[in-house]
Image (cartoon, rainbow, N blue to C red):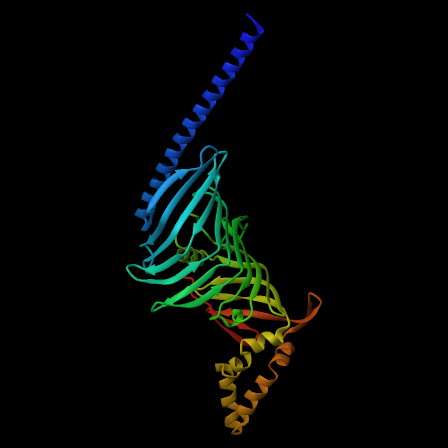
Amino acid sequence: MTTGSRTTRRYAALLILVALLFGGWSWFWFYAAGKVEATVEGWRAREAKAGRVYACGSQTVGGFPFRFELNCDDASARFQSSQAPIELKARGILVAAQVYQPNLLISEFRGPLTVAGSGQTPSLVVNWKLFQSSVRGTPKAPERVSLVLDKPAIDRMDGGVAHTVLRAEHIEIHGRMAQVLADGPAAGQPAIEIALRLDGAVAPDVPAAAGQPVNAAIDMVLRGLDDFSPKPWHERFRQMQASGGRIEVTQARVQRGVTIAVGSGSVSINPNGHLNGQLNVTVAGLEPFLQSIGAQQMVQTSPAIDKLAGALDRLSPGLGNAARQQIGANLSAGINMLGKPATLEGQPAVTLPLRLDDGAMFLGPIPLGQTPALF
C-alpha cells in the first residue's frame, strides 16, 4: 500500500469520525431541545393547577449547537390565586442556558410590561432599556437569583393618562440562600440574603425620593421562610410573620444630594402585614433633606404637636401656637439635640432612630410617611 493511499484513508476516517460526532451531537441537541419543551409544558400545567397561568403567543426553541434558547413572543401571566386576580403582559421573553451549564438560566425581557386586574385595562406600565435576570439552581433548590434593569420607568395609568411612579438610571436586585439561625423562633429555617442597588432613582409620590435622584446600596436578610416553592410574595411575608421571622438590614447607605445616611437594624411583620422595628441611622447633611420633604410643616401639624399645643393653650391662650412655631423654626437644632453627634464620611452628622410603628415611619420625631402592608 502506497503512502498516498494510507494518507487518504486516514483523512477519510477522520472525516467519518467528525461526521459521526456532528451527527451524534445534533441528535443529542434536538432530543434535549424536545425535552426542554416538554419540561416547560409540564411546568406550565403544574403552575396552572395552582392558579398561575403562563402563555406565549408563539414559542420557539433554538441556540444550536451549544445553547438552548426558549423564545416566547407576546408573553403573559395570569395569577388567579391572589386576592385580586392580576394579569401581566410583555412583548417577549428569551430564556437561555448553556448545554454544559443547564442549572444557570439567563433571561432577557422585552417591554413594555403591563399590569392589570382581570379583564381590566392596565393600571401600571413598566418599561426599560435592558431587563435581564439570572437564576442558578433548580426550581426546588434555588441558589442565586439576580435582576438587572437599565433605565426602568414605571407609570401608573389613570383614565389613559400616565403618572410617573418611578424613574431610575439603574437597578440591581441580587438574592441568594443564606445560612440558617442556630436558635430563636426561626431556627432551622432557610433565609435569603438580598442586595439592592439603586442609581439615580426618582419617585415623585415619595417625599424622600422626589426631586433629587437617590442612590442606595442596601443589604438585608429575610429570615423565617419555610420553603421556596413558587408562590406570591404576600404569601411568603405572611409565612414569615407566622413563623416569627424578620427582616434584618445588615448595611444600608442612601444618598440624596448632599444628604448621606447609613444604618442597620431589624424589623418584623405584625399580624396586619405592617412593619415594626427600628434602624439606627447616621445622617450627614440633614438640614437640606428636612427642608426638601417639608419636615417643619409635618412636625407642626402632627397629632403629637396638636396635643401639646392644646395643653399649652389651656394654660395660656396663644401659647400653643407660639410653641408650634418655635418647634418648626428650630427643628434641625432640636433633632441634633435629640440625636447623638457623629461623623460620617468626613462630615458632621447625627445618629437617630428610624422607627417603624405599624407601618408608619419616623426619623426621630419626623413622620416620613406610611409603608404599604406586605399582605
